[in-house]
Picture 1 (cartoon, rainbow, N blue to C red):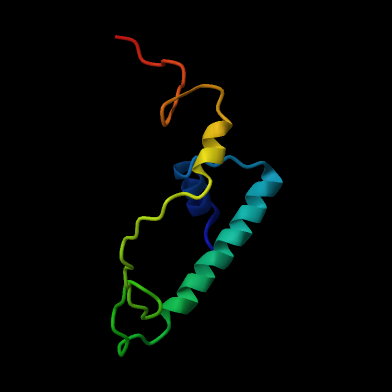
Picture 2: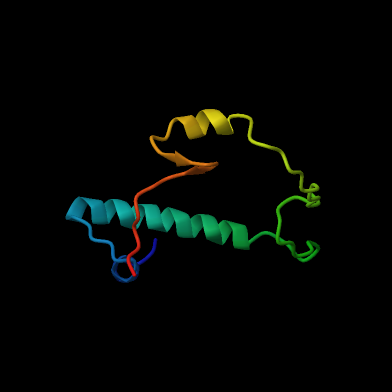
Amino acid sequence: MVPKEVVKKVAYLSRLRFSGEEEENFISEFSNIVSFVEMINELDTSEVEPSPYPIDIPNIPREDEHKPFAYSEELKNNFPQRKDNFIVVPKVVEK
């Protein structure tokens, strides 16, 4: 069981506030989490190579392809003002 003072300090550093009942629940949950981490620390990982990913999947990027948007005319027709091939919007930046 994690001491109450340690849990209160962690809660303070995490900017958490609890009522009396919430505090007791948090202490119990926090103790369970710490117990679980301690179980993981007991595993023998001496034969395991460090890896940034849990499984070995290569990242194969695909080639960039230019594909025109099929509904661009329909989309542009939904705007009240258009000029040439552009959508007109109100000016938002002043000089």
